Length: 434
Image (tube, rainbow, N blue to C red):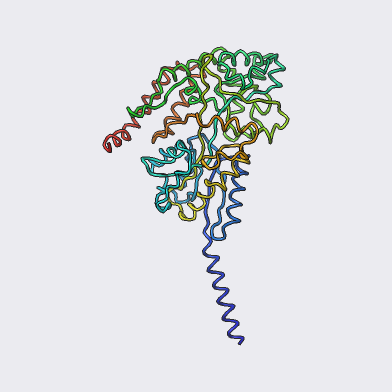
């Protein structure tokens, strides 16, 4: 009898050991900082609590520029990359073309998983019809204004009420000048508005002026579109009037990739107006809960123009060399599915890419609904296999223009000359397929 009991206990021990060995470990990398990082940790904790056979470990890597994947590329080449990586969605096509990402088709079992997402997010997640990512969040951009700072400067803030429609860029400049303050040395101590700060990107103003960045029929990048040139010219002139170096000195302390949210100049009360995204609502709730502020449309070039915003967002990808691909995809479906997106939207005030969540009124309380209403007409960056290169070249040109180091049209011609040749092989492939 004792022998029998011993054999049974031994069998149970071996069975338990076997079960323990079946737990698959998934590594997940993100460069996001707070408060997004806490939301991601919560999603990972929820997933781990619901799965005995898969455990995910979240690692934060140092933040970099929007297109920087240097650490990921080095790790993948060295065989030490993660199983899941959080990638800015508009550069998925380029990183897939670079051979950095895995085709997700084999893990979908014939199911059209991407059919559940917003159309533009689906397009950003693919290259040549092949899925390389699952869309995560999205967003939209608007103008935030600090009511107390503006009224202290003598501004009647009722004109910024979104019920009155968008203000012109010229009027915003007039209001900003009322807030500007300089010290005895002539340096800015407080500013009303810096058009190119935070989400005041080339795409923001290019779209605002009605520009198109890509001609799909001609398979050609179009940074010299007349409306984009007009946008860059407006920025050039604004900088010239304010003093490009003085503005740069003021904002230099606020441009680090790892800048804590509470040091953002708008949150710190040093900048009265800023173009940024819906996530700022969550940051203000955490770091400046008493701020008296409003949100309105992105300013327009001319009275009567329609305001234009744009949407972006992140995605979950599986890099080459993932050690637990099946388990990694299970986690990707969870975090980019309803459980993950619901937590992320509630905790960070981003917006979901799942169409099933966009009509959930509980996810869009108060000011967040303003951004939800913008989403149907928001534009997005062209999902190109040179999307990261295009962004980087536009960003370099943008900086030369707002520093008044180069005339707008010349800067944009340089962008076209550097980007279009890299797009040509893709165009040739498309032509051959058609």
